[in-house]
Amino acid sequence: MIVLRANNEQYKNLNGYKNDCSELQFVKDGNGEWIINLEVLKDPNFSEIHDQLNELEEIEYVPVLEEE
Image 1: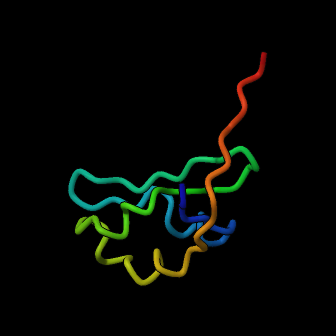
Image 2: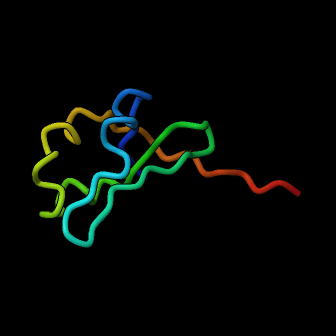
C-alpha cells in the first residue's frame, strides 16, 4: 500500500490541521516515519492545503510490528 510520508517540518506544519469536522492526523509506520493515507488528496476538507499535501513523498507502507 502506498502512503504519504512527511518530514519533520511538513509534519509540524500540517498535523492537526482542521476544517469543519475533519482533522489531519499523521501516524508513525514501522520505520518511525510520519505517514498519512493517500485519500487525504481527494478529501475536499483538505483542499486549502492540497498543494502542501502534494509535496509529501509517496512511500510503501511499513507495518508496525507488535511486541510479543
